Image (cartoon, rainbow, N blue to C red; front, side, top):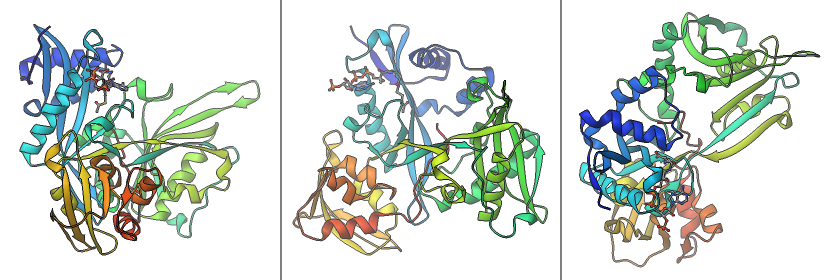
Length: 409
Ligand SMILES: CC(=O)SCCNC(=O)CCNC(=O)[C@H](O)C(C)(C)COP(=O)(O)OP(=O)(O)OC[C@H]1O[C@@H](n2cnc3c(N)ncnc32)[C@H](O)[C@@H]1OP(=O)(O)O
């Protein structure tokens, strides 16, 4: 069997996307979802694998800018829409697409590739490391109270139609992204993504509802959610499924969570994607009645080790020589001296003795400051060759605020 791997043509998009949909189970998306993904697909950065007229492999790459420790933004390829037809699985088609894609990303000059994985086991072999995690929380809101700091009485909440509130919500999002690593600066068109409201995302609940938080007439936060009514012999047991909560200050944030937890006729509030250091964890009266689960979120791949490590800032002065092994992108393999602090960094090739030995996966995992180098070393994934180098680098790589990817792509 011979297959043809090539850049996607606009005229092929429908067949290409249909092949992707089938690989994810074959349940067709709604019209608005399909239309949005068609508009967002960057065909010239996407590849398809064809067996005759049949599309048997898909992979896309969005043009992203990802927030990094120190408040910088790093150009990144947002790897997406990866699939191989079930009829053609496990004969190397994914590997061939990853090969082509990482070569392309390198030629585009983007130091990073990032993705969210359908299964976390798939991408490590291509040099991706798990850099951010997310919490899912299920709050027993019949028992848990939310503590609001002083000033809550000055925050006014009001329902607005989702479309009417969209611009104000997007502005709040825009103002929050620099504060956490791992967030995406949304390019024009992407503001439509959080407004998608397909039944598959509603957890059996209502269409998306939107509440704005305002102070002195200014929007300072918002919550979007679904309300799922339920009745038992004992009375109402409705639940709230949170889609988004963002606020510009702690008071507005707490007021929004209190609102979500106190909606009449409901006794549970669930959210599938919160930061691992979400202040919510400190607002609740009873953490044991908030089921919390952690999972992987953004996987990061350093496509150009030198450029990537220079593009972020460091929490403490660091001067360390890494010996990097990168089997899939050998141009990264070798010794690199990173010298940096909170103001900037250089990362250049060196012949000096190596101080830390690792693979490019560990650098990807630690890149956004949410996974510590010491923790990776504890798992035997990093070798310290100069005593003290690990601790110094680990402190420097850390981020005060946990990195977080607020939405998939
Ligand atoms: C960023 C995203 O879009 S994530 C979405 C990924 N897509 C999906 O999950 C859709 C359903 N699955 C698929 O389409 C396919 O099974 C894919 C894309 C995951 C894998 O495609 P394939 O062409 O079968 O992979 P390929 O043959 O190149 O496998 C390469 C290696 O990865 C391994 N591998 C592939 N898929 C998986 C998996 N799901 N779990 C664990 N290992 C895997 C293979 O065993 C192989 O290992 P080896 O090199 O040690 O032999």
